[in-house]
Structures are given as structure tokens and as C-alpha cells.
Length: 283
Ligand code: HEC
Image 1 (tube, rainbow, N blue to C red):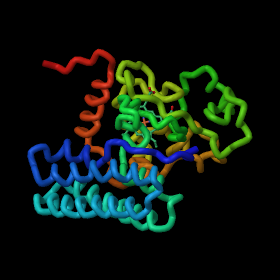
Image 2 (cartoon, rainbow, N blue to C red):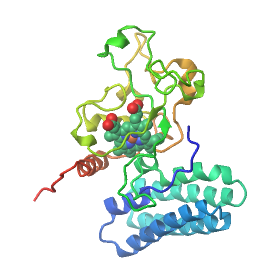
Image 3 (cartoon, helix red, strand yellow):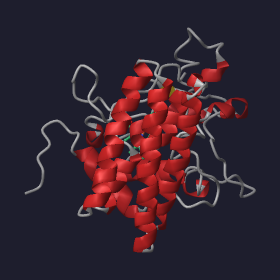
């Protein structure tokens, strides 16, 4: 149901800047330039200015090229190098599509944003209101089945969100089966149960789901009697094609390096706590 242009969001590259390179002024300069270019892309999308979008995308590509060289020179930090490489590819694709294939631009932008902010938008809205950390759109992420729910005692019962059984108005639109609204992240750290079926009880489990769903699904889903991992086990096979396998971090594959290191997950959890009403930073 990704019909609208998804606008803005803290870019993965800005996050990487904060996490890895607090004191490196060159690096911060490139990331700042990326932030400005992202803002400009949004204006140019609104104005349907393909040439403007392409120019901004080239700016980002150039900054990331320098960032890649920076990390390569420092040795190590392979994740940061890969990140910069992937970002350059995404920026190049965006620049190319902006020149003629405007329909693809929204999806390209999402790949470029490449992180939580792609769906849980972290920028103030156009009218200056603080961010709600949701794009108000629907996604099938395929949380594992929660055996503790009474309804799920019936192995034929599936809560398919937009297409029913609770919601009934568009039950025949099966391309939406399994989709749920992207929730706000405000006060999420105060909850005891997460996702539509309450399957996750801690933010650590939520972050592990994002990190390992595709690279190490055996950490997320149960195994059948024959040992096979029952990936997407709360969505009937005929609807599993609706599951998002393109928005990062869900674009990875079995056995690849997960998107986040344990420290990244811990940092994001600490950040989520700052979204609580009345949050007070530790002294
Ligand atoms: C592709 C869009 C998308 C991306 C990317 C994404 N989320 Fe989500 N997020 C969702 C949707 C949709 C749900 C609700 C899923 C459900 O209920 O089954 C959700 C649920 C959550 C929840 C549970 C909220 C609650 O109150 O139950 C948290 C916390 C969360 N996301 C954090 C994150 C973090 C952190 C990241 C980055 C690692 C991230 N999300 C990336 C779409 C996304």
C-alpha cells in the first residue's frame, strides 16, 4: 500500500556519522551535506523536478564516495565501507530514475534512506510539528506466530491485518494480506508487548527481529519437526509474497552479515527510550 511518496527520514548515513565518527570533521561535513541534499530531494519531489533530484542524488553519491575512501583508509570498519558502497549504488539509481522514471523515485529514496527512518519517519513534518515516527502506511513484516494467543490455538486462524478477518471492507484485496499500520515509536519503550500480535516482549527482541529475520531466520522462527525453519509462519503461503523484502534491513539474504552489530541495537534501544513522554536523560 505504498502509494504516497514517502518523505524524509533520518538517513542511515547520518546515523552512521553519529555512531562511528563523532570527532571527524571532514566526515561530518559530508554527512551534513547529505542531510541538506536529502531535504532538497524532498522539495524537488514535491516540485516534480527530476533534474534537481538527480543533482542532489549525485551530491550524495560524491559524499559517500569520499566516506568510503575515508573508512577504507582507516582500515577495518567493513560495515561502514559496505554501507557507503550501498548508498552510492542507491544514489546512482535514484539519479538515473529521476531522469525519466519518476514512478520509481519513491522506492529509490527509501533504499537510500536505508533504515528505521524509512518507515518510522524521524523528521519534523512540513508544518514544523515534531515527528511521529510513522509514515502512516501499511507493511507486512511477518512477525512470528504468537502461540500464546487464544485465537491461534486454531491452526487455520490467521490475523491478516488489512485483509481481515477483523477488518472486512477490503478483504478481497489479497495483495494487502498480512499488512499492518506502521506504528508510532513515541512511548514505545513503555510497552510490554510489541507488534500486532504481541509476539515480542522486549525491544531487544524487536531489534533482533529486524536484524536477523532474513540473515539468520532460525533465531526468529521455530523449526518444524523435520528441522526446517518455518519462516513467515504467521502468514499463509499464498500471501507470503506480500512480505516486505526490499526495504532495508529486510533486503538481506540468508547467511549475509546482519545490518546491525550488537552495539548498534543497544544504541537504537537507548534512542527509543528518549521518545518517552517525560524522558529525563541520565545525569
Ligand atoms: C518497512 C517499514 C519498516 C521499517 C524499515 C522499520 N519498521 Fe518498525 N515497524 C513497521 C511496522 C509495519 C510495524 C508494525 C508491525 C506489526 O504490527 O506486525 C513496526 C513496528 C515497530 C515497533 C513496535 C512498536 C509497537 O508499539 O508495537 C518498533 C519498536 C519498531 N518498529 C522499531 C523499528 C526500528 C528500531 C527499525 C529499524 C531497525 C524499524 N522499526 C524499521 C515498519 C517498519
